[in-house]
Length: 169
Image 1: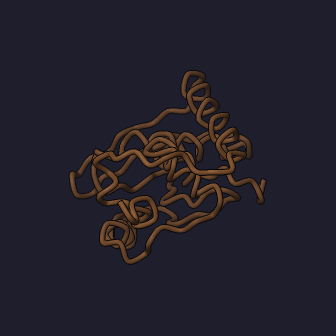
Image 2: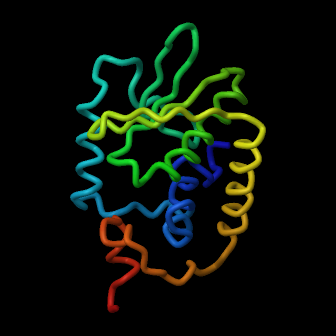
């Protein structure tokens, strides 16, 4: 699984943009000086400092936060706003799947510190089917020789790959 290009980041990217997912599958890295990426790093560093273990790495995953609560393992994914909830949910499901494969049953929480929100994510049969569909589509996408054509969406203006996608446009 170590060399598998399907990662938490690729499933997140797939939900937002298939072109971004194609780039992530090939280990392209977004522009790190992008102010929105820098804001995300700042939030990760400075939120939930005294809660559990931060940046736990597994093959294919870099989990933002893990802690125990009432004898239950909680996996937290920190996001800037509720606008990124759909992708964060699939990303968390991917992490919960990896942990389940290692014998750890956990619950997920999307943590949005600026909005003081927590959204619970459960890994059940329906969620497993939804995640598997995304993984299957990513497996197909990884064998495409060319990236999907860019399609402008509102997230493009904040994306770290915008210069790649829209150069010359």
